[in-house]
Length: 285
Ligand code: C2E
Ligand code: MG
Ligand code: MG
Ligand code: MG
Image (cartoon, rainbow, N blue to C red; front, side, top):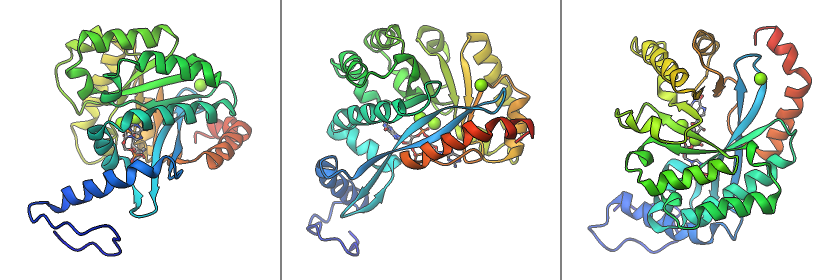
């Protein structure tokens, strides 16, 4: 394996250990102490309604600045946290922190928290969510949980029951990265899904891939037919926004509105939105 600059940890002596495996082990090792050392942060990305472009809430996204590894992104560490089971502890922490943070914001704002498929296999997930809601005093109606399509595919009755129990408590469910998983749609009607989050890849390739627009039209019809709210991710340009306005798409999220940001920055964003959001909406963004 290649020698990694500035790495204070033991060298990988096993010649069969690939560079990726070595990196995974480094992450695994560093992750253990990262919560205690307060290296994790929850960042917030704004979500806007397309009716008046008003701010409706945020998505909570994990950030990790490791003392030994530097900035590590969720696309890399979530999978590793799932493989070790650490995601359960981490997932609870994210839920609690996002509810505590969002509680300090105006009461019409919601927060969407990503939940890993592995968390859903826990016997205590329903009671954990209930306990966190009770302990933080956060209204369940302001909480949305996001699950990805791939999780649902091997979704058992057990998963559906847990989702229903949590929904019964007043929490809503969003299906994340919709369109990138499996094409079988039979499960959509069987699951308690309130919102479809169309994967950002569709929005992002609107100007280059002629198939993107008809796919988005079809997904918006599907969402409407099933009575689900539609949110499009990856809204980076005004062209994207203008196209989404022609769909039955209720909500949008993307760099055009804002990138994920630390809580303090998001609180400032909220203040600004509350004071000039209406003016901006009138000006057509
Ligand atoms: P996701 O849930 O689909 O989150 C959206 C991702 O798209 C975020 O990446 C966000 O920064 C990025 N994004 C948002 N708007 C735009 C845009 O306009 N353009 C582009 N190019 N990208 C945009 P991030 O924060 O790196 O997260 C990656 C994934 O990691 C998330 O995808 C989610 O699946 C997972 N993740 C993040 N935080 C958590 C967490 O607390 N728990 C779990 N289980 N998974 C998490
Ligand atoms: Mg609105
Ligand atoms: Mg998400
Ligand atoms: Mg997504």
